[in-house]
Image 1: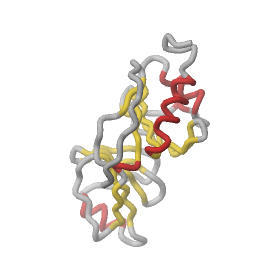
Image 2: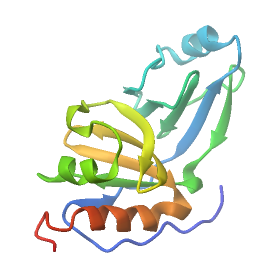
Image 3: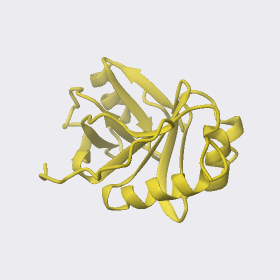
Image 4: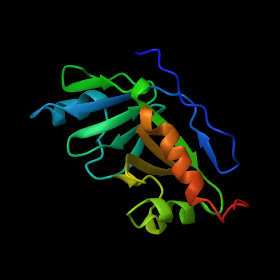
Length: 164
């Protein structure tokens, strides 16, 4: 892994950096999905969903691709595994205005977004993955765009949450 600094963000009650956790991309080889799932002991999400497995989270990341957050043994014989920990910045958005803020940023119907749903979209022209963990929305972007995404969220919050 790189020794890369995570951007520092001004504290705010509705937005924060997600505690550091290991992130890897997992891509099944052309014909190995059944063997990959058997080796992992689960059925991997085939649609934009998030699942928990052995203390880790697995997010759909496209057909035959997933993001794995947390420590989990991954079978390298059946998939390409790429370390992403230093490359991604994760922000958490919560509170009574979270949906309204995200409506201002995302070109998807976030109001209908259910728990454990995942989307690959954009926020303020920044490519993001967004998912919902209970009452929190998590947005992941490339680390180099982390400060810009934080700024866009703060701008979208103007007039809400006691700002503006």
